Image (cartoon, rainbow, N blue to C red):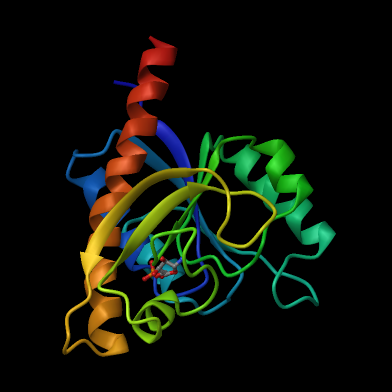
Length: 198
Ligand code: GRF
């Protein structure tokens, strides 16, 4: 079985990255993590990569807050290409990607978001769901385009909102669902990759 080479990008704690790396290590996921890249020098996601002996790198983002400077985005493309990445997995990466990445990896960049998109894109989506009085929230894996938390939806998982929920308890429950959904979606990409390369 030829493993799908993936690259994981994140800015924060990396619980989704950890779940993916655990599935790979246990043989449940036919992927190979080639590199983990963060725009935050001391992000825990880089430490997780080191714990799993996965190549990892800090990408200096430049002077903007929500996107990468052009040079940085071109550099990201180079890093991922050099690592031979076939699927780019955004796991809490807090910057919007633009033409360099989208052209280099068409249909091969995915993201996970903690709401049932198209509801509640943007920051702290679980708080938005609570404030709206919804009874159900969840998480979404989608293809990445130039808009925030936008792009064709690949899969969703529902999570109930309980009367006693706080933002923290709801977020924690959604994250449990994320750590199941994301590896399952990546497994589908792996199956397609293997079918195409056999
Ligand atoms: C996740 O909740 C994901 O939905 C959002 O960012 C968060 C990243 O969490 N895009 P982690 O770094 O994987 O723990």
